[in-house]
Length: 98
Image (cartoon, rainbow, N blue to C red):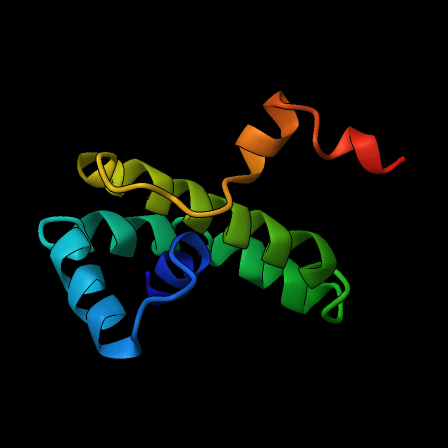
């Protein structure tokens, strides 16, 4: 989950991100293992279609893993998230550029 921690906190050190990832994953390793196992069929579909299926499979897997991260980091909600894109959308900062 280190990549997702870096996305949440821009100025965090790598060692601190590893420590936080270890804390977040306590008790969730089996859930992540089962989640990754559930994609085995999709990976076979990707291989059978001569890797063209991976165009759809990889974004699906990455989105699911991001949602898993958001689910397991809920106990850490009291920590502020820098540059939250959803806040920008609510405040319509994204649409002001057009």
